Length: 104
Image 1 (tube, rainbow, N blue to C red):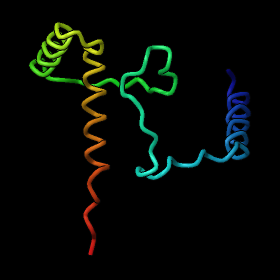
Image 2: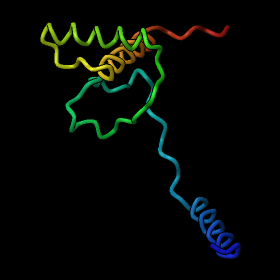
Image 3: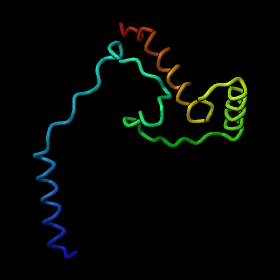
Image 4: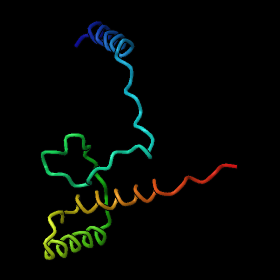
Protein backbone atom coordinates (compact mmCIF):
# COMPACT_ATOMS: atom_id res chain seq x y z
CA UNK A 1 0.00 0.00 0.00
CA UNK A 2 1.45 3.35 -0.96
CA UNK A 3 1.87 6.13 1.62
CA UNK A 4 -0.84 8.20 -0.11
CA UNK A 5 -3.39 5.40 0.01
CA UNK A 6 -2.44 4.60 3.62
CA UNK A 7 -2.97 8.24 4.62
CA UNK A 8 -6.30 8.36 2.78
CA UNK A 9 -7.41 5.14 4.48
CA UNK A 10 -6.45 6.46 7.92
CA UNK A 11 -8.33 9.70 7.28
CA UNK A 12 -11.40 7.70 6.24
CA UNK A 13 -11.18 5.58 9.39
CA UNK A 14 -10.87 8.71 11.55
CA UNK A 15 -13.96 10.18 9.87
CA UNK A 16 -15.84 6.92 10.42
CA UNK A 17 -14.91 6.94 14.11
CA UNK A 18 -16.06 10.54 14.56
CA UNK A 19 -19.41 9.87 12.90
CA UNK A 20 -19.99 6.46 14.48
CA UNK A 21 -22.99 5.83 16.71
CA UNK A 22 -22.49 6.76 20.36
CA UNK A 23 -21.16 4.13 22.73
CA UNK A 24 -23.78 1.89 24.32
CA UNK A 25 -25.09 2.77 27.75
CA UNK A 26 -23.11 1.34 30.66
CA UNK A 27 -24.69 -1.66 32.41
CA UNK A 28 -27.32 -0.99 35.05
CA UNK A 29 -26.44 -0.75 38.71
CA UNK A 30 -25.54 -4.05 40.38
CA UNK A 31 -28.82 -4.03 42.32
CA UNK A 32 -30.72 -4.18 39.02
CA UNK A 33 -28.72 -7.15 37.72
CA UNK A 34 -30.57 -9.92 36.02
CA UNK A 35 -29.81 -13.26 37.66
CA UNK A 36 -28.04 -15.62 35.32
CA UNK A 37 -26.55 -19.04 35.55
CA UNK A 38 -22.75 -19.19 35.24
CA UNK A 39 -22.91 -22.37 33.13
CA UNK A 40 -25.74 -22.20 30.58
CA UNK A 41 -26.10 -24.79 27.84
CA UNK A 42 -23.51 -24.54 25.08
CA UNK A 43 -25.85 -22.85 22.58
CA UNK A 44 -26.81 -20.11 25.08
CA UNK A 45 -23.35 -18.59 25.57
CA UNK A 46 -23.58 -16.01 22.79
CA UNK A 47 -22.89 -13.05 25.07
CA UNK A 48 -19.87 -14.66 26.76
CA UNK A 49 -16.33 -13.37 26.23
CA UNK A 50 -13.40 -15.76 26.15
CA UNK A 51 -10.74 -15.04 28.78
CA UNK A 52 -7.36 -16.66 29.24
CA UNK A 53 -5.91 -17.00 32.73
CA UNK A 54 -2.65 -18.43 34.02
CA UNK A 55 -2.87 -20.71 37.04
CA UNK A 56 -0.22 -22.39 39.15
CA UNK A 57 0.01 -26.11 38.37
CA UNK A 58 -1.14 -27.16 41.84
CA UNK A 59 -4.26 -24.98 41.57
CA UNK A 60 -5.09 -26.43 38.15
CA UNK A 61 -4.58 -29.94 39.52
CA UNK A 62 -6.90 -29.19 42.45
CA UNK A 63 -9.58 -27.86 40.08
CA UNK A 64 -9.34 -30.98 37.93
CA UNK A 65 -9.59 -33.22 41.00
CA UNK A 66 -12.61 -31.27 42.22
CA UNK A 67 -14.18 -31.68 38.79
CA UNK A 68 -13.57 -35.44 38.86
CA UNK A 69 -15.10 -35.67 42.35
CA UNK A 70 -18.16 -33.73 41.20
CA UNK A 71 -18.48 -35.93 38.12
CA UNK A 72 -18.41 -39.01 40.37
CA UNK A 73 -21.32 -37.47 42.29
CA UNK A 74 -23.25 -37.04 39.03
CA UNK A 75 -22.76 -33.30 38.43
CA UNK A 76 -22.76 -32.10 34.83
CA UNK A 77 -20.57 -28.96 35.14
CA UNK A 78 -17.24 -30.49 36.07
CA UNK A 79 -14.66 -28.87 33.78
CA UNK A 80 -12.14 -26.27 34.91
CA UNK A 81 -13.95 -23.49 33.01
CA UNK A 82 -17.27 -24.31 34.66
CA UNK A 83 -15.69 -24.41 38.11
CA UNK A 84 -13.94 -21.07 37.56
CA UNK A 85 -17.17 -19.43 36.26
CA UNK A 86 -19.06 -20.68 39.34
CA UNK A 87 -16.34 -19.38 41.68
CA UNK A 88 -16.32 -15.96 40.00
CA UNK A 89 -20.12 -15.83 40.12
CA UNK A 90 -20.07 -16.61 43.85
CA UNK A 91 -17.39 -13.97 44.44
CA UNK A 92 -19.39 -11.31 42.60
CA UNK A 93 -22.60 -12.25 44.43
CA UNK A 94 -20.82 -11.81 47.77
CA UNK A 95 -19.32 -8.51 46.61
CA UNK A 96 -22.71 -7.17 45.48
CA UNK A 97 -24.43 -8.36 48.66
CA UNK A 98 -22.23 -6.22 50.89
CA UNK A 99 -22.58 -2.47 51.07
CA UNK A 100 -19.60 -0.52 49.75
CA UNK A 101 -17.60 1.21 52.50
CA UNK A 102 -18.62 4.81 53.17
CA UNK A 103 -16.15 7.56 52.35
CA UNK A 104 -16.92 9.94 55.19
